[in-house]
Image 1 (cartoon, rainbow, N blue to C red):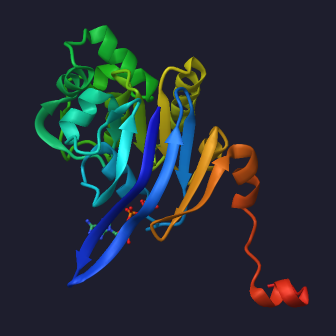
Image 2: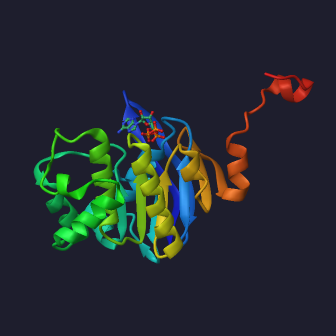
Image 3: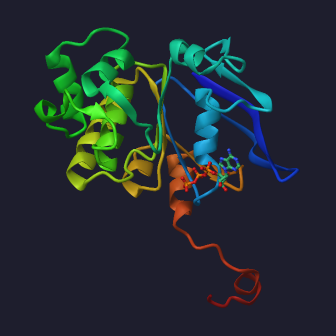
Length: 243
Ligand SMILES: Nc1ncnc2c1ncn2[C@@H]1O[C@H](COP(=O)(O)OP(=O)(O)OP(=O)(O)O)[C@@H](O)[C@H]1O
């Protein structure tokens, strides 16, 4: 189980403090899927980076099972069981796809194992095994390889930042199937950051983040129906008009 208490992350903008993650608390129980959504620039990716150890929280605590991992760096958190797929995956010139998958898996993968991982994200493995993770790969290809690296190993918590971004419909449906399988197995916690209704609808719990704060957080049954309701303006509420 992942438990987050009062997590805060601030940046300094021209001498002024700006709180990108503002006292956020939540938990994800074993086998649960939490989907984080909300408007662009709300702080979702920043929260994910703080959870993965890429950014360091100013205050708050993060517990993985009973272990306090707040002070752990990115490697230590990965070893503790946190997997993270970037919204915009970094490129590594000179590193082949096969090598990266083996590094992510923490063991030398056979060709068959690598092929299986690439197929799960809709890539024809033969064409990709020896490709370099450089600028010759398209954004969608990079994104799917990045997702495959997180799927290469079982984690206590896997965080995927907008897994749908830039990938084609066919690959998207393969990916949804893989997330459904992981969710059904109930072995790991999944945190998906997404704007996609299909992904949001898979959640056990939904959290909406806006301006660095949690605006809504609860079960899918409670939160999902509220997501697509237009907020009424004050005049409509008091005078019964329509915007
Ligand atoms: N290191 C940083 N320094 C200053 N501002 C930052 C930094 N990282 C992110 N921001 C700003 O913080 C806000 C939140 O960014 P973030 O990427 O977390 O949003 P998001 O909710 O993931 O958005 P999107 O849905 O567009 O991916 C944005 O206004 C962004 O410009």
